[in-house]
Image (cartoon, rainbow over all chains, first blue to last red; front, side):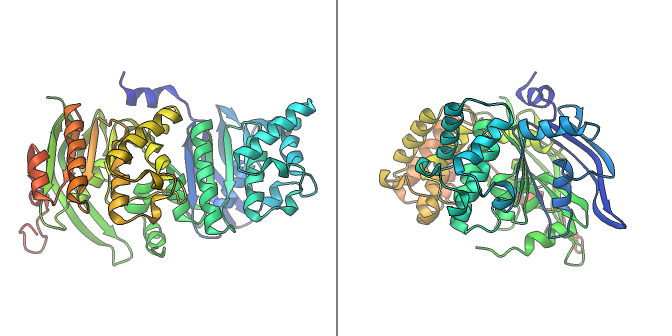
Length: 261
Length: 235
């Protein structure tokens, strides 16, 4: 068996999505979305506001219930799971990074507490170990350990976002959902966050689904790209291929509309 | 000799949906083979399709028809994840432009292809440092991002990155274009060494002396240009 055949044959998709559809009354949120996500893969979803990318993400992450379709995580039907089982999955195997760190952090709790809380939610009880692990993760996201007892409200936007990432990754999830994680940050802070995310994906073998409208971000971060318009996926493929040789009229418009720097 | 790139009857066209859905055929009937240890240079005027062909081999442009085997994968029909694996292990590409995450140190930019193969960080950085030294990038620049470097320095960083892993297949787009004589010799030496270890190389070299030195064969892509639909003559 060749290297290529091994790559294709041995691993199974971590997430398998088939025909996912969500309507809001007569309006389409997302329609007939299908894709596989494999371990270690970063999938970017792009499209303008209202294209359905955030609806899709929240359906995948179990925050909204789709009207039709199937989502299988490691072969397990996520939509057929009970609430308890799905919550457990979202605490252990999954993580969700919000665009606004305030939605993903507890602003009244210290930085260390924010990270430690996730550990306690999966059963950690030893205070010293929890604090040690929290300190380790603050270091990994480049937050000085002497800020461990400060509240996130005393942090800059970029630090808050890095803290949110530490809080999400401390429990070593395998699948991370990200909704515009670099939106609203200064360009220089964005660059640092991108580098951090790339390193974490590589070193921890994370699978990531990242929703963004920033084509430069997906070019640097995503292996594969899905383009959405009016709730439908109009094109998907290898990220640089979709950006450099777009096939669909909408993708061509999207790519040609970006200002060159 | 083992063919590492085998292109058969390859064709390509662009459809410009936002410009009256104009269909522009850019390639037809392309045939090309590159064996292990061989360097093939693409020639033809600017716009004849040299870069287009390279991009198709890399999976960056889709193909319209034909087959394009790299190693044991038909890139024309491969899944995105198969191409990702091919690029990681087998197929390297030194483009003319350096595209990196801003603020990442040059040393890590060069070590990156090795890190994504699972090479331990110290070993990857050692290899990166060796290449940067050989390409005369001063050590004081290694901790800095290459985004602020001169064109020639960026190109050398790009070359170091492209040669960090011993890819069995290498695509080189004008690797000596903006280099001085000393660094040009270093790059030609790297190419000779890659050939020596059995790498199959497909390249574009406008530098005729460099082309004569490293290329075993030349292929003129003008022969792959589709006939002009209006005149029936090769465009």
